[in-house]
Structure formats: C-alpha cells, structure tokens
Length: 367
Length: 37
Image (cartoon, rainbow over all chains, first blue to last red; front, side, top):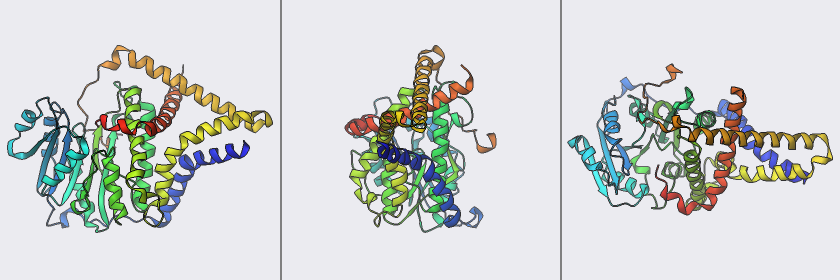
C-alpha cells in the first residue's frame, strides 16, 4: 500500500508541479522563438478564410460577423459561415451581410462535418477557425497570420481570455476555479509553444495552413486538438501567440462547466484512438509533452483515488501518512463546501440574469 | 465564511469536478457529439 501511495502521489505531483517546472527549465535552455517579420515589411498578405460552424446561432452571428469585418487585417479576408441544420433563422441573420459572407447550409451532421464543408468551400491559404460566441480583438487575425512567416509553423493558436481572469463575473458561479485553471493552462501552452509546439489549439481562435488540413472524422469531439496534432505529427509547429486575443465568458455554473469538461476529456480519450501515433515516441515530436500534459490529466483522477485509499490504509503506520490522509480529507471537505456554495448560488435569482454581450475591450493593459 | 476560505473551496471544487469529468468522459465518449460548443 505504501508503494501504491508513493507511485500515485508522484504521478499527481509530476503532472501538476514537476512537468511545469521541467517546461520552465526546458524553455529557458532550448526555447525556439517564432521567426516573424515586422508587419510593415510584408507585401503579400495571404488570403485568409475565417470559418465558423454554427448551429442555431442566429442571434449571435450578426455581432460575430461585424466583429470579423472590423478586423485590421491588410489582406483579403473571407468569412465562411456553415449552418449545421439550424432552424432559428440563421440564414436571414447572415443574409443581411450579403456578399461579405459566404453562407453554406447543411443538414444536421455535427461540427466536424460542417468544418469540413467550410474548408472545402474556402479559398484562403490560411484558415482561421472561430466560434459564433466569442469576439476577436481588432488585430487578432493580423497577429495570427504573422506567425506563418516562419515555414516551420503549421498552425497558431491565439489566447482566449475569460472574463473571470480579470474580475469576479457576477453571472458565473465558477469564476475562481476556472480562472485559476485557465491561467495555469495558458502558462503551460506558452512554454510548450516555446519548446516546439502546443498540444492542440483553442477552438475559439486558431489558424492553420490549408495544406495541413485533413477532413475530420464525423464523430470527432475535439477538432481543435485533432487537426493541429495531425499537423504536429507531420513535423509542423503549432505556436501560441498571446497577442491574438479572443474574449469569452466563463461557463455560467458548475453543471455547464462539468458538461464542457466531460466533452473535452472524452475527446482526449478519443484522440488516442483516432491518432495512436501520439503515443509513439519517434512518431510524435512532442511525445513527452503529450504524455505529461494530456495523458497525465487522464491518469490523475485514478491516481487520486489510489492515493486516498492507500493513505487511508497506512494512516496508522506513522505521523506522515496520518497527516497526508488528513490533508486529503480537508481538501475534499473543502471541495464539498465549494460544491455546496456553487449549487446555492446557481439557484439564486442573480445567477439567472446572464447577459450575452462579450466585453472585447478587456485587454492585458486593463488587468 | 471568510472570502479566502470560500475561494479555496471553489478552487478545490473545480479541481475535483475536473477530475470527475475525466472519469465520466471515459464512459461517455458516445454522448460527446450531443454537446455543441
């Protein structure tokens, strides 16, 4: 039981503390900055296609399209909206933009098939993927594209800024935990990008070279991980550019956040089935990072359970194990209190007044 | 309850919820497509 405890505790400690420490040292010793030219030196900006797959987003799309039309990108920007079986008047909402937007209507088939159709219809050599809900900063696409000066770069992920990173959002009960987690996650991505490549992208804002895109299987859960990781497996870098910013709100409550996380983590299991080469050291150039970050997160829940049971079993064998077991009890007790607070706030009338407008004005300078 | 304790409780809850999600996610891959992002 002691061995089981120590193995479990070491896995948890490595995934959440050891790996970030390793990344920090690795990035310092062997960081590879992206070779970008200053914008004013560029003559031929590539044609960029922004692809938005949407299902019943008629209310959000006009604001979203206006946000994209206000981009400061100097080259040609094409906007492709794919409606995946929408029944809410999405066509009319997009129709008001006339020729500024290419609109494709599909029967309901899921996001991956909608993205495949969007890419097939797009004419740009750079594809930018976005969702209907978030908003971009005015120069987001300019910054994303500037990374493609470096021929090693196959994709770029921007920074998704959640409102809870700046303040305590009144319309979410998840701000504290999600804000801390997201800040930590972005720190990892920044360092993984410096070393070689991030392990996927942020679905709300990422760009890829068109030639690296392969149609997604219909059942894909995480297009923003599968498509970039396929580019990584072909030798390209996916880099993180925090100058390209998208803005979003935190999930309104614990159950919405839990649904989102279940989908993300189910997707991480699925990707291992769709791309088993990710687990082969010589096939995956970021194998160690992938194992430490993505596979580690899938292992941690099981090791937490093992650590809890093992420390309970040996708690009587010395003060150290008693203390460790006690600390776990305190931690899970705190989590239960956190769950109770979240559920109480979710039921309060103030939590139901969630507004839809996303504040694009939030920037680093406002922090 | 002090604000600091409340904050710690929320963070602990989020951590546990994310780990529970990893376990549930394994058993619910087939349901994933129903959740549109």
